[in-house]
Length: 297
Image (tube, rainbow, N blue to C red; front, side, top):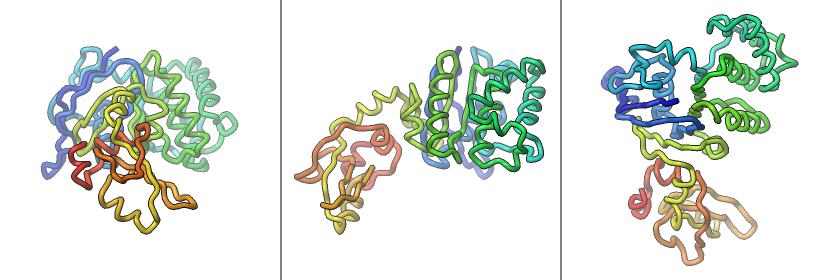
């Protein structure tokens, strides 16, 4: 099982580049596609889902070009777009039956699969309620269910935890991890914690270009020795932020605990700490705000 993205680019009107020379090789597991809003994540997802054609480069699924021959991938594809549309008058059950018919799934097999998926996404009690009357989080869970209807080999989910409460978000993260063994899962998001909890591989994207691609532990290792924590007075916080890339602040009774990136010790009292994925993301993607940060990037 292989998804190969080879020098893919996408140009929109007025020569705006949504994606630029993006290359990546994927096998089974969860890829966390991580980047800020507008980085090109959704453009890439639409190309991989055969909705949008690339301007240049090519994508192959098990050796077959998906632009020239999209049907092979579409039969094995599950896709949850960022803007998931619904039919408000249909119930969750009716909507999933409609999607199953559109995908050519046998009716009896489809109903069994729908029963399984409604349990999986915790919607059994709401299966007969009109979609228009469901909360945003519940509609998102219906979207997750429809993406899984055909038991896809390639599952693409674009900002899937939008609108989910913390308990639902944990449930979804666990679901993605459970699904990853025999398929390729691509999770596109700007939420670092979602990727940190599920991804076996991470690709950081910004301004349409691939910045770095590696296992989570490799990315965090690249930041070792560059993450520091120390206490500053509240009145000093803005000055610290102007000199360093700050990844976190916690207010305490004795001041503000600052976590920041710096090649050198940023203050005499600053202590090195173990990096996390958010630190790595900040180093590779966020704009530099001081000379040390520029060198680190």
